[in-house]
Length: 157
Image (cartoon, rainbow, N blue to C red; front, top):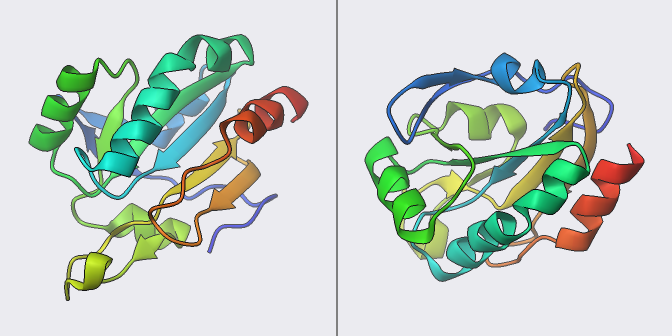
């Protein structure tokens, strides 16, 4: 599992437009990168979380942050999710479940469904060099992050 102070594992994932996106691309802009792992598009808690991030996007930018959502959903579902809810940040597809394993946030057998492994809801904030400066992992995928704590972490690190 990735710890605060460690360099975040690199990745290449497809976005909702089926374009490959690298972690380095987000780090190269001089801002802090918020990686928001979420279990599944169109589920109630994930929709609440992503729409809350959408609504506070301006505050995140003012605090020198950019947001990237990551789930195991296919790019096609992420595209429909972003369009339906007007999500104004990249959503990346970890359909092979490699990145959730690298970050230590794989949740096995969601809702008791054997083999249905998803991203556990979690937040990693990375500085411009890719070092993890903040980490939060839900005790269960139904738990929302503390959005005020995320803003404070952006401002203080």
